[in-house]
Image (cartoon, rainbow, N blue to C red; front, side):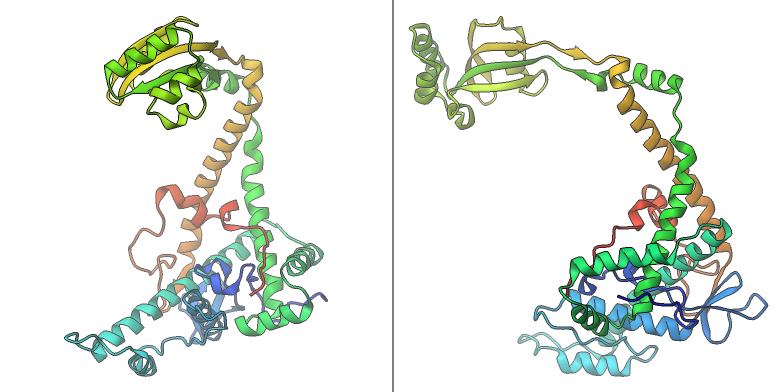
Length: 413
């Protein structure tokens, strides 16, 4: 595949790396042209949003609305063919209502047909879903572009193309199949190039944010070990043989049989109602304290090795048991635990760094983002007053973390 230049009308595109029929979220849309806008705080007349001195053009928005419609329609397609999809024709939805009415199945007897108002409501909901997906992606893609430029983070065309070539080679048998994929999805080769570029920029930004957090001191390791010693301990474990019966009399009979010299396998097969241990000749291995019902647990860990115990009454029946092996508890030393503690602390520090950066990142760029009426989302400073993300997912949705930069895995449609 040749290298595709970034045309002025195609700047800012995000490659669709997964099968387009699975494109449920905006993470796979292509970032559109980011044209310089006129001075002033108002959104230019040919645009849907303005971010700093750049704007997202209406034509670009419409282009990716169509891609989103194809993608969403593909999720419900059962024929294996490319779905035919159109963006609901807002604001009146005349065509959309007519299409839904024509495609509607005849209602069951006694069930009224959907009214035009109800069909229009369905069209409005579908349109709003597509609009929000596309706007969220276009805006956040713009944020990545401007943030990485501000921080002087760059990726080479060679690295971008290398990843594209690898993904295409893995997903498609020949270049013609890839071209057919592009045609069906509405993407261009320039779109593919820029999406991969944008993804690599996200990775660069994540690496920069987390790099300084990789240092963990010996004092921090010691403090974590002292506070979490139990996490680095292996509890005592016991291997045993058991017979579980429904009645005390059956348990007593099983014990007498064992006392007489009969094997555990023979006795378990005859008396036990616990199928799992019965199939293993009564064996139950690697039991740690607290894993069994209290009455049985107490009996197991009070028993002397090699001594027959029971009958023991439990909520499940009556047990006869014998401990065959005891593996003593072990405590890892600080030295043995140090490597894993450093990994834990490094990961925790990086997560905190991303969370902190994410809050600032979103706050800064949201303040720079103005959206035209009818195109507002939670990412717009004049958008709805709703919480865009949960506290646990803030870093994933507000910053370019690993969660938002999946490995290129283009699959064949």
